[in-house]
Amino acid sequence: MSRLLAAALTVVAAAALAVGAAFGIVALLEATPDQPNTPLITYEQAGQGS
Image (cartoon, rainbow, N blue to C red; front, side, top):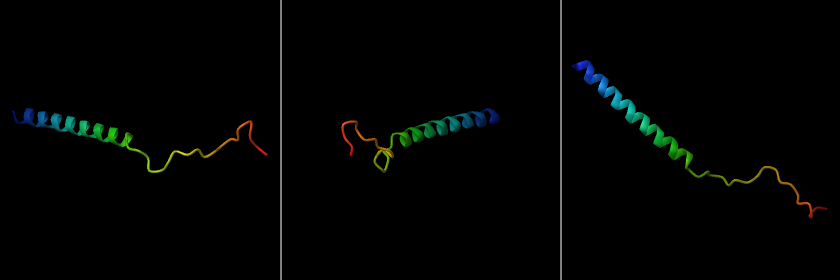
């Protein structure tokens, strides 16, 4: 019975860890970036120029 209890507790702990990791990943993905999203390369418009 002791092994069954240890196995059940291990399963519960692993499930809790997986759920916590999933919520953490989602929170990181939804975080706004610190710097603005500005393009590195800009192209001139066809009507503009020198």
